[in-house]
Amino acid sequence: MRILLVEDEGPVAERLVSEIEALGLGIEVAVARTRDAAIRAIEAGDDLYFIVCGLHLPASEGDDPLLEHGVAVYERAVAELPGTPTMLLTGQGDQRAARERIAGRAPADIFGVGEPYPMSDLLYKHEHSDYIERIAEVAQQFALLQRIEIQPADPEDLALSESHAQALRIFARRHGAKRVELLNLGGLSDSLAVRATLFEDDDRAYIAAVFAKLATLPEVAEEAKRYQQAALRLPAGSYAPLLDRVEAGAGRTGGLFYGLAERHPGTLFSYVMDNPNEATRMVEDLQGVLGAWRKNLGEPRGMLVSTLRRQRIASTDIEPYLVALDDGWRAFEAHTIAARYSLQHGDLHGANVLVGEAEMPLLIDFANVEERASCFDPVVLELSLLFHPQSPFRDLDWPSVSQCEQWDDLDAYLVDCPAADFVRACRRWALEASADPVTVYAVAYAEALRQLQYASNEAERALGIARAACRRGNALIKSDADGPRKDAPRKERVTRAAE
Image (cartoon, rainbow, N blue to C red):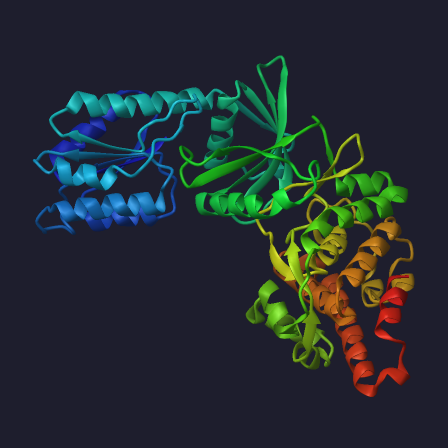
């Protein structure tokens, strides 16, 4: 457990550190003696689980200690570490001003015991035994949380940080669990998505299975907001219900915990691998579920292909690969597509759709829900088969690079494909959802290029798909410019492209 002690008086700081270490509770103490040093420590990115801060501090070494500097540290701590409790120490008669500053901060259940703990408190410096007891209480509760066992199915496949584990333990303790088994479902950057199974004891008495999304506190708050705004519009039973949140006690990390009706639901990836003949029905079920977000579609909006691509990957990230793209990429990116917009899941890969015994899709992870081109989700779902780290299809021989170059020709692209029905169903969904098939190819172009920043070993396949989408998009644009007599009507092209 790491805490930050902010105290300008050297002897006082040394005494506090000595007494904290003497508790024998494994507390690591970082010391800052000025406002500037404290703010640097808070902004450094380390997880801090408790902050003790003297109210009167110098701005920097040699300056006079002032109340405003201690308040500045407190306000920075609340902004940067909203889930970390802070105890202010004062030796002067300024408690009224300090209490006014901390009055609005609500207590929170940071120990998982169902009781709120003060997130901000004010003590006098002469109440020495009181604040040492407070620190000891926090450390003891932290130690009790560490007794809850966290067991990943594959430790090498799951980069579980201390703060991730802390958020899981707080949730587990609230629900009487002593052991949590984890299955990695993916995640990027500081976020982690896992299926967590809770047990009462070492004998594995089952309590519940949940989908847990662990992320920074701002990301947790944003996902909870998107869930409330979007998921609740979907049919009941098509998404995992939000059961609980951890928003304090785990450093910079928080957690959202969604209920799963079954103990061992599999992912859509594994379902399609095991049941390829059911893939079309599953995709159509998903299309029906997400159709609730497509009600009251407005008129198509114009957007440059280059703008759509930059939303997925920056120009600087594709510069090393530009020589590998066809000459037509510049013309394609200069084209304005006519895209229908609706709410999209935003990360509809095969690990974000769970399938249980009822063989119905269950959506999880709503962190990226927002309005996008209405063909976005099915394109992402199709390409996740090739590029998502959790996909069992990723390391197969299909598709070859030459087949990726024919991504727009399904008959050629799907030769020897073990999930051909799945791909056809996704492509048909994308084309049906779009106002203009060029938009489908623009989204695929952007999504394929996006893979270059995640999977360099898949660069050739990603570039092959991007080139194919670019060529077909340019061909459709040219056919429109040449006039309807030289090509089939747009509606017929949509139908034919999906066949």
